[in-house]
Every structure is written in C-alpha cells, then in structure tokens.
Image 1 (cartoon, rainbow, N blue to C red):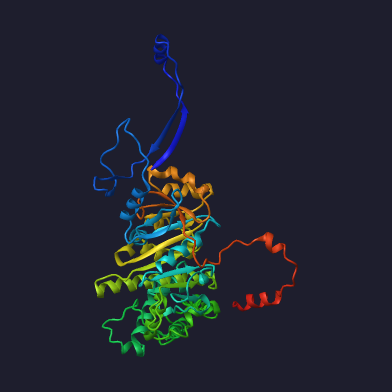
Image 2: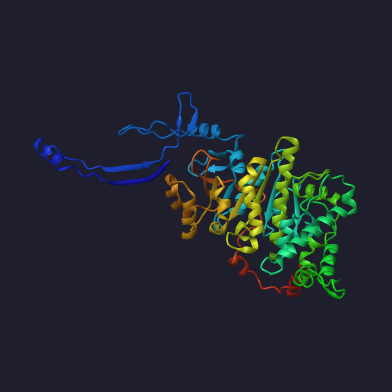
Length: 498
C-alpha cells in the first residue's frame, strides 16, 4: 500500500561533478521520484495471497504494477462467499469484495458527516444481505428513512407508535433503574423491599404457576401485575402497627415509599410510557413468543429478513429504556438458542445515528450503552453482531468502538472527528485519514480484517434509495407560491400521528 509519494530534483554530489569535468561529460538532471510503501502481503509461486510477509524487498529491487486480473484473484481469494459492496474507486471494473463473516462477526463502524452517503451505504449493504435465503437483521431507524428502501416482501417495518415492549420483560436491574432514584436516602430500603415484592408477584401469578418452571427468580421473564406492586408499596407507605405498649405507631416502612410511588404514578400517567407500562398485545407470559417472532422477523406465515424498528416517534425519555430492553432480550435469546441447539442464530443489529443513544457521557443513556457494550464484548461467541452508524464517532462509547474490527469511513471534514478516527487506527495506516475529506458521496475507505488492505470503494447505489435526499432549496423556492395547510401539521404534531 502506497502511503506517500515524493518528487524532487536530483542534486549531483561534488565528487560526481568533478569526475564529469575531468571526462568532459555533462549531467542530465532528472527528477527523483520516491514512494513510501507498507507491505500488505505475499503472493506465493502458486498465486495464493497471504496477508503479512516475512521477506521484505532489498534496495534497488525492481517495482512492478499489479495486473488487474491478479488484483481480482487476490480479492476473490480473500473474501468468503464472493460478497461485494461496490467497485474499487481506482479500478471501476473491479468488484470490492469483503469478508462478510469478519465484517459482521467482529462488529463494524460506518462513519461520515451529514450528506456523505451513510444511509445510501447502509441501504446498499442490507439490500445485498437480503439476497440470502435466511438472514436476520434488526435496524434501529432514528428518522424513519429506510421504510421505502426495501422490497416489502422481505422487510417488516415496526412503527414506534405501534411498538410494545412491556415492563415484565425487564430484569430486576432495568426495573430498578426505571423506578428508583439511588440518590435518595431511602433507596436501599426501596430496592430491598421491591426485590421481595417482585419475587412474590411473579411466583403467585396464576399463569406462571401453570408454566411448570422449577424456580422463578426476579429476572425470569414472566408476566406479573404491576398495579399489585404499586398497591403494596402504598400499603407499606401508610402502614400503622401496634407497638409493644399496645399503642398504634408508624410501620417500619412508613413514608419510605412516598417519592417512589409519586415517581411511578407519574410515568404510569404519562402516555409516552404506555408501550412499557400499559401493553395491550403482550400482557401474558404466553405472548412472549409472539413478540420475539415479531422482533426477529420469524412470523410463522410470513417470515422477514430485515426488521426495521422506527424509533423516531418514541420520546427520548422512553427511547433508551426500549432500545436497552430490545438489545438485552436479543442477546439473551441467542445465548439460550446456542445453549439448547449447540449452534448459533446469527443476528446483525444496525444502529443508525448511534451517538444519539450510545453516548459515552450521557447518564440517561447508560442502560442502552451497557446493553450494546455487552453485545460488543461477548456477541461474537453467540452470533449477534452490531454495526455502529454515526456522524459523531467521538461521542459514541469508546468501549463499543474498541471492539469493532472494520471501519467504513465516508467523507469526514471535521478535524476533531478525523483525529479521533486516527487514534483508532494502527500506526502504519494513520496517514490515510488525510484522504477522508476528499471522498465523494457514497465513497468510503474500508479498513480492517474484513478486506485485504485499506481500500477506497465506490459503494453500489441502493435501489430503491432511502428517503434521505437533501432538500433542494433552489428547486423548491422556484415553485409558484401555494397556500399550505398549517392546521393539519399542527394537528398531527399534537396527536403525534400522521
């Protein structure tokens, strides 16, 4: 790989000048051309390419241009399954073939500024993945732009307004984070009593008794009545007991749960939390199968390959809890799938605008970030991968990015983002960052083990394309003025629906 090219005038030494004068010769000055290179691999006598090399060329060794056929053979040998995402920018007729197993299995990052072609790239890759007879992809869509980018035969679009991910699927830690303020003085008592009440609520639910589960724990995903838990907290908060002297006094938890009850009821009365606290479709333990079939695209009559979850209608206060729960449930599913089947169930998860909910510094995003970090660190063992898509990589969890092996870098002009990406790359190829600002839309530099060497690629245009095109102010403003229906917009805004 060429990392630097220099050209300068050759300057003869004083000794060479003196010798020329003595022999009555003249110097012809030619420019001196030098290239700096990084060895990528070796081609053995049989034509097989292997990354890395034990032998380096010596000084004055001839240099040759590589024939296109040899480049094609190298890329074809290195990729598994002949999976191509576009064309080489410098050799337009050459397919850019990658190792899809490594790209997904060891996690990937797609980064680029607004307008660089991230949505284009994601849609193009997923359209190719959808060609597999059996593929499972879950895409978190923050702006609702991917609905029109796929054939309806193989996608399931889940609108955030219709999404339900009920409270009873949460584990004890997630419920605690949602309900209890750990900074309160009475927080330890609240947590201890909640553990006890939750355990009893799950064990005594009539449906759960018939499930024949040997031991139900506080983390077992079974239905329980959340209202019963609130009523028990209310009872304990105002409980009066008879003391040793026979006089009535406050109970041991009197007044300890007042703020907790107010906090919970505030969320119960907030319609934005209905998808968690007031499920309509998934309000029994038996409904868990239907929910997972929906999320994984494994509906019995009409299986899908790509599930797009449009989280744009979900308010920010609820969004992180929902995404965290979905991620944790998918990880638990593939974990237990492997335990009982002794093979993996591959799931590829794509995070559009990942910096909006996988931030390193925002406390409100902690649960989502931890769920994603668990997949980043352990998902490879169980066949679940994540692909981070962001225009602000320095705001995404460093733990997640450190576990990603492939970097698909589109146009990046922000110096801070360039410096951040530069830190993530090996020393030998950090100079390639200078190219990022010159890339065209839909063009990227792909780095990592999923491709033979750092490669400049023109991504294939998706067909159909996602709804992410830039607005043409020139064309729109050149139209004749027309009266707009302001009231319909305001009504949809108030109703939170189209």
